[in-house]
Length: 180
Image (cartoon, rainbow, N blue to C red; front, side, top):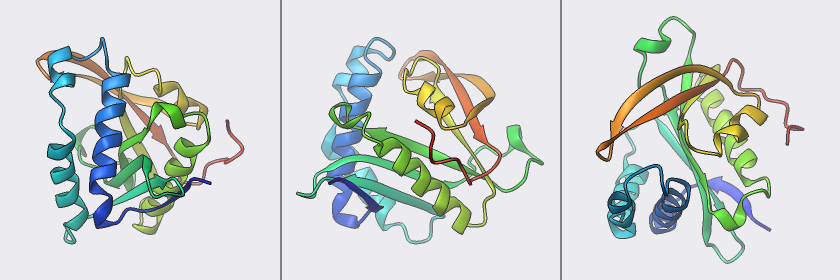
């Protein structure tokens, strides 16, 4: 049985593996191949290790772990990074990342990680949330199925190419968990 839990400092390599593998599979044909091929698990592990050990930061990180301890998904959340676009809309938190390895998708892990992120944001006195996703990411429909609605959009230059991003928002962190 796979369970979700707070990430621990020794999870950095597993989180990095999920990060790199999901980006390579999800963004093939969307982001430049040389960028995706150049993604490095050791480099990302160092970044996630720093993130996990930054006790002064206002963020949370959760993992979906298989019984043997392998990390198969993760989510990170915290305070809203870009306040300008959503100014005056309450205490909004942000889901920074939510990724599940392709072989483990469709098992409820994304939902469990999203719900755990909402609970963490609520504990941090947030009352709503947003999440930015590339418009070309087919997983964006998962956020709609989970009650998210499009609340913004932007074009960003990333990895040498221009990409469209959509913001999905939840007015309440209490979500009907019976959704698919």
